[in-house]
Amino acid sequence: MTTKTTTRGKRAATSAVLPVGGGAIATATWISGEHGLAVGLVVFYVVAAAIAWLWSGGKGDIAAIMRVGGDERQRSLDRDATTIAG
Image (cartoon, rainbow, N blue to C red):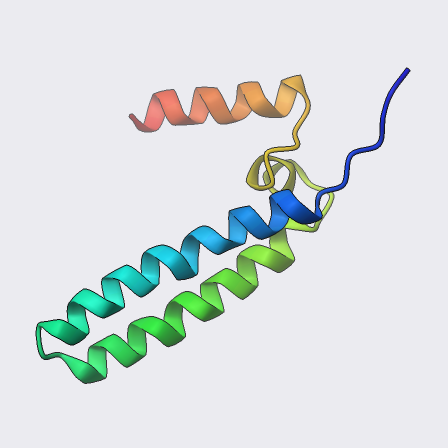
């Protein structure tokens, strides 16, 4: 028996990493006195999060890996790529 899982929560969590991390970087940049760069970083990370949100909703291998919903083959692809990159 298989159960249907929703990807909405995982999709949101995956996409939330970008604005949270980007917000921390932008805050540090703002504190250092580079206000223009900080605003640019905020815009960049919001756009990157929107792209990640849209991409993770797809049906491909990368989308499944991004939302942590892949099957065994997709997880092994992710594991192998991480090992090689490391």
